[in-house]
Length: 160
Image (cartoon, rainbow, N blue to C red; front, side, top):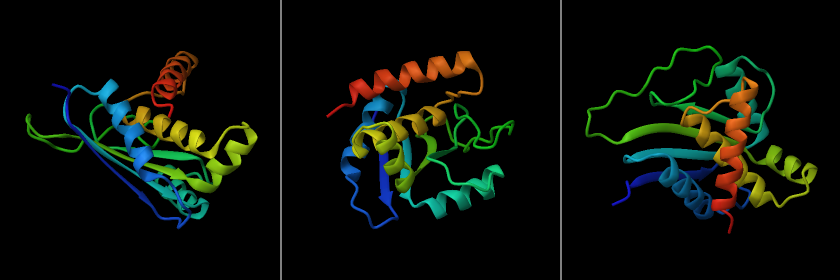
């Protein structure tokens, strides 16, 4: 029996977003990548909020498209070179992966730039963020290639 995963999405922007579709995407990704019960959340925000989070947690005073805040031993830390500090859990507890934050306005701009539907760009950013929660990174060329390969496979698997 496949592991059961808990996913919670929210939208702080007031702009219509199909959270159920994005939750399905996250569920598919976790079903492919995590073989134990896990939970995660994602939040759709505006550029001001993601800039504030980027400044506060990473030291970059600029907006970005996606941030990942991992809580497990698998996660890539949000701050470069930070030592991971996983959420404590008993062996039988659910794996707390963390949270993905996506900027809706940046996703809109990138969708136009890449000539693809906004829904596809949001799906891509969510997958990218989840892969960071699972330890993928793109700081080195070999890491970038592995992460992009997995992103593209998951984009195909989660296409509507």
